[in-house]
Amino acid sequence: MKQSEITRRGVLRKAMVGAMGITLEGANVGRAVSGSIKIEEPFHGAVLNRRHGKQVDGGLEIRVSGRAPIRDQVAVNGSPAQRAGDRFTSKVVLRQKEMDIIAQSQGNSGRHEHRVRVVWDKHSYPRYRFSIDDNSFFLRDIAKQNYSSLFDCFYLKDLRDLHKKYGVRFVLNIYYTTEDGFILPQFPDRYKSEWKDNVDWLKLAFHAYANKPDRPYQYASASKLIGDLDQVAEQIHRFAGEQSYSPPTVIHWGMVQPGALKPLYERGVRVLSGYFRPSSTGWDVNYLLDDLRSEYLSRHDALMDFDSGIVFSKIDIVCNTVPVERTVPTLESSAKDPNQAEIMDLFTHEQYFWPFYSHYLPDHFERLDVAIRWVTDRGYKPVFFHEGFMGGSL
Image (tube, rainbow, N blue to C red; front, side):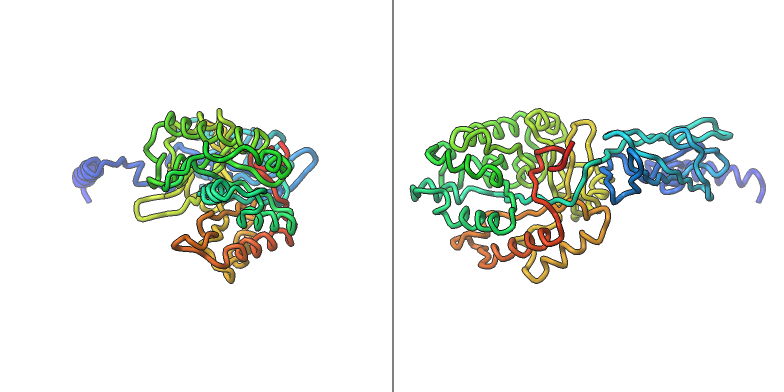
């Protein structure tokens, strides 16, 4: 082919690429571009524990891998990396809770650098938490029936029975109002001593102002979300006491504006749980995180968002959607994966416990019993996510 023809075709290719709205470099996604270096593992924000490396004196030794131009020399945190084609690997020892991993390359195109920051869950151990969403019926029932005890309500009684049996702890995420007009200020404060007596296993947290509309905070301002949170928190403090309040770990529908994360952190939020699942329109119930982080969380226990300080947690099971016979296989699937085995995030919704509800599940408590028995038998300890680091020691 003549040089003039090569030049002409090259110009045409550039014009076509430009018309498509991409760059030539964009066509090389997934391959190292000349002069670039990228750490692929660990992921920026990864929460790493004993399952992700080898415990050594004073630290956790982990494997670092990535891509760089074939001819470049690569060092990771100052130590030469091993090379194989455009791949590089190295070992790094984590010694602080948060640590930067820096990969540097040196070659014909000059010096380049890529860095990620990870979190070392130094004192990690197998643990689980249990969160129940959409709570309002039990509060309305107790207020209406004027029970002599909170546990005259079958819902709280059966949760207490599970606690006595397994030591499980529950966080009940509540609304300010129900669709028939009940509001939290109508709930009496005369049970305060009972709330206090059970504070070691039973907490209350904000979920939303109301069940409807769906996705109430997906497009709402941070001030709207925080305003609703403060109203619910004020009522919990009034009728149950400060010790019974938990900062929220699940916002209704798991969707909030990015600008709401820092205000939530300022209200004590340290962990937010979601599904991080793909849908026809993108990732959903993912707090509007970008696709890369959402995909990562779909396969891992947790990820730190350093901008806000909040850790995102992937829910392992939603009991109201998983039949009894599928409960153990669902949990075992997570337990077999080192990236999902350390922390079990168990979850369900209140309405399925109530016989008057249109989608009532007669075996709902059995589903919880099977799930909690499984984690208990395998040595997982019950925790509250707002205590320590995801329920573990800081």
